[in-house]
Length: 228
Ligand SMILES: [Zn+2]
Ligand SMILES: [Zn+2]
Image (tube, rainbow, N blue to C red; front, side, top):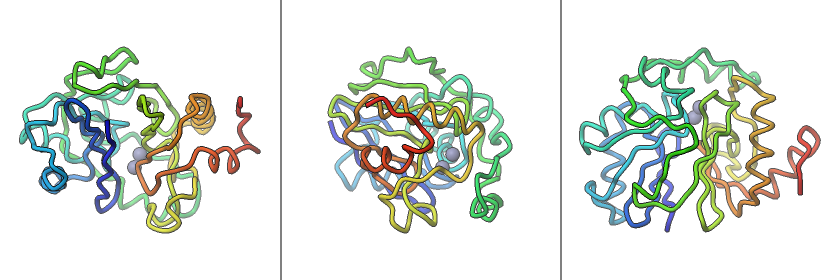
């Protein structure tokens, strides 16, 4: 099993390659062909991709899902609590966490091609159906339907639960930070705690990264009581 990170203009998407390959998130609108080309370059054919799985339904993670579903003819999955954002092609109002977030808000607060999800995640989806060994965890806070993925090699994809670095992850990308936006900061903290309790080896995030879990514990130990 291997996790390939594709760094797009604004966000990361991941190709998780096992028996088959699943695509985790789809970037901004109009990035579908770029994702397919990048997959080809690492030897993953379009026909190998079995599922588009969303860490959450924000424009920079679900923007090209409708296009990719059309091009690849594969199902899409999202947590039930984020499904309406995907159906509308419009995010819930963003709550900025700090000044930088206010500056970035006009860039990301825009509509995207709507999509009716094929599978609604309520923690019970078997990824083995799609040729991948891994477990889905509900890690709400950034959005109510944010999920994380945990794989047998102890690597995890946690979406926008945290981000790496500054300037959208382009600067000091291995430094853990709160994301620019959170629907519920208390829930974010509880979800970070849940992820760390799984003792992951490495955390892949939606912007910047990857993150070393030890740096996450150090950074947030004053606001989160970790169970070590
Ligand atoms: Zn997001
Ligand atoms: Zn994002």
